[in-house]
Length: 249
Image (cartoon, rainbow, N blue to C red):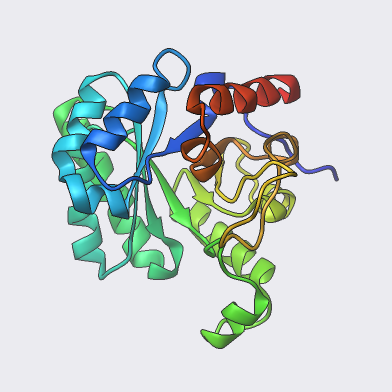
C-alpha cells in the first residue's frame, strides 16, 4: 500500500519553520523583521532560549508569529508535564519532548497541557516527539545502546508517540515513508530538520534531504536554519524554499 503523504490541510505559511539559531534576541529580531510577510513560523531552540528566555517567546507570539519551542523536554513525567504547561502559557504553537522519555511522560504531558488549555480557553499547542536526532547514524545509536538500527528505533518511537496521543514527531526525511506507513493517523504531523539543497554542505546532519523531496515523501513541516541564516540575502534564500514547497504541494 502506498504511504500517505503530507497533510493537505496545513497552510503553506506553516510548512517552513525558520530556526532562529542565533545568540541573542536582537539577532533573532533582525531575522524575523527581514522575513516579515514571507515567514510566519519560527523555531526557538536551546541556544536562543538560554540567551533570551521566555520573554522573547512571548514577544514573538504577541507579534503574531507561530513559535515552535524546540527544547526537547526529557525528564521524569511530573517535571516534563509542568514545563509543558509553562510552554502552553507562553502561547507557543508547537513544542516537543523526547519520545525516549517513555509512555507515562508523554501521556502525562498531553493530559496536563490539554486540561490547562481547556480550563483557560486557550488553543492547545501541537505536542510532538523527537524520535532519533538527525545527527545520529547507526553507529551512534549502537554506541548508546539502541538495539537494531536507527530506522527501527524511529519506527518504534513514532508508534509509541502516536499511541500516547501526541500530534506528531520530529524525524529525518529519510524515515518519512516508513513513519507514514507505521502510523495510521493521517493527520499525524512530521516535522523534519536536516533539510539542505543539493549544492550545500550537510554540516553535522547525517540524514538529510532537499525541501521538495522531503515534502513529496510526506513531511508536513520543514525546520531550516543555516541555509537561511547563513545566506547573504536571508529573504531570498527563504523565498527560494517557499517556491520549491509550492511546486510540490
